Image (cartoon, rainbow over all chains, first blue to last red; front, side, top):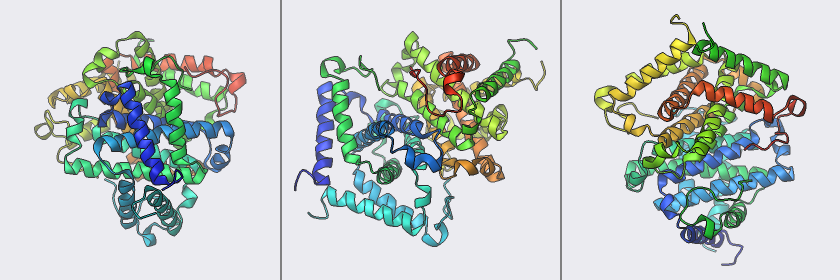
Length: 125
Length: 125
Length: 125
Length: 125
């Protein structure tokens, strides 16, 4: 187990966030409702960076150092709020992701979904 | 390095997502713009689960198994899209989170921020 | 038909937005995809204003002149992007709202929905 | 003043929404915080419809009757939540839009902004 290990890093981030919130007495604000609002607010700021950029220009656009810096900070914000929500609710973030990937694999079978951006078979609502 | 290690798990999730998208020929849709839209869309669905719940009831609300299942799937969706965006742009997710925590520590000094939910002096960007 | 009439005002806003975009040669950026991103980005900024405020404090919070000013500007931003999307797609905004209210009236019958914040009968997905 | 007048229609929508919420005893859930969450949640669902569609295909995409129907309902949802928030906070929706257009006209002067999707000099707030 070295400092470079993702396990250690994720654990350390969690520990850092816990200490950060405790030092500021912010845990009182970190209920699941508020954190879900924080996630979508930060995700909105992330999307704002790319709203006027064409799909075909987006990969090039994000190579600009200033853009990249803003993207990294917005991605950081979304990630922080997501980890805080998982901590608060006792949800295992990586486990939730792993299970959702497998659910998606079932919902979007390769033969139906291949090359199609619209959702096949499984109705969304 | 065991299967339980977060490093291995995060790497495996990345690998799984890469294979998932490749098998469906979906990489063509996964440009940074589309992925940022996916993140905010999924974050909106996550927030939708908690929009009518009072702050004071939110911790109890998320213990309901059906609610928890939906939350886990929405959290999984946000996490997947976030990882895909980082993969596409070459941004280190944990690194972005670590740097943003430290930036927040500077922007919200304990003595100004303690117990306050509103933003102190420091400009947002 | 006076200046105070909502019809005239909404028409005038539409006309103003059309001229605003044309003068800046921005119509090229105002496709339905970009505008839907603009709507959710601005909506995220609006939600950001209220993310740390308790439900029970929210009505009082928005009376603060500075908060109110920011809310008004964010509401203005969401409204502008919503009108631009309707203009671009030829969707009648008020008609869409009117029809959705009636659909909601069917989906959330009074006897099932009364006093309940969770969605009755009709499955979301 | 006819039924076709936007003023009458907007007033009627407001009146209908008031009656709708009162009949279901839902006004208790319609505080500014919850409504801002509803707006961004619905905006996220609206953006979800267009997340995998290329900019260049978006205008054509929204002509599909099924897509158009979903867009109209999502636009309706955003509009409803926006009107409810304005009602709750006493903010004049059209006035907020009008003032924001004029603020944008100052912030994005034609000579600096013409043909550019990126933000010019003027800080956002």
